[in-house]
Amino acid sequence: MSPRQRVLDLRHAAPVILPSLLLCDFGKFAEEIRAVEAAGAQALHLDVMDGVFVDNITYGMPIIAAANAASDLPLDVHLMIDNPVDYVDAFVDAGADVLTVHVEAKNPRAALERIRQRDAAASLAINPSTPLGEAEELLPLCDMVLAMSVHPGFGAQEFDPVALEKLQELRERRGGELLLEIDGGVNAGTIARCTGAGASMLVVGSAIFKSPAPYAESLEQLNQLARQ
Image 1: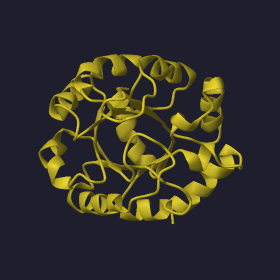
Image 2: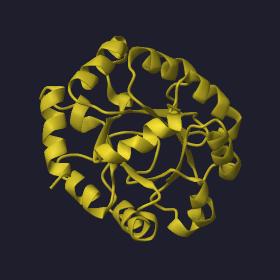
Image 3: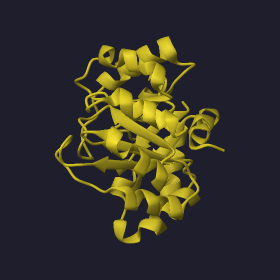
Image 4: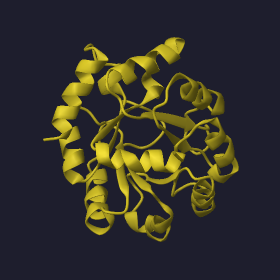
């Protein structure tokens, strides 16, 4: 099965909670992946930041490859980088099933086209301050759209409900064509609003990895709230 099809098949499992590995214990990276997989995670989210497009720096292809080696779950790789088209091949080769590029980055059209050429799922991210209209001409190239509910670059930020408005509009106009994802501040207090607005893919970091509860308990609670 192609990487793209693995991602598209997640529609049948929605809502899908994707643990954001940026907040895991990197000293026990493979163990953390196996732990959230055993707890019921159906896909994993990895944030790549270059220190140019966003202020923070995280990791690159070796970490994606390590996650791919540790798990058979689909890998959702969010490229918060300045010129993503230059790195599409390397990240797909490392094991990414879906690559998300930003409408605010350089040449997102070329990046989305290249992702599709590699038979991975193509996803477009939209920052809170960016009008949805700026992504309009790119939507036919997308399998998924990620509405950011925080400004990208750092975790543990306050949830911005502007993402819900974008999700609602996308659901009304293209809900049958696109997977809809939200990232930033998704927790027990916000997750039902996210699925209510149309999100089927929910990126969760602190509410899993910083919770005092076991991963399985946190995921079960979030799943129950997401399905309300």
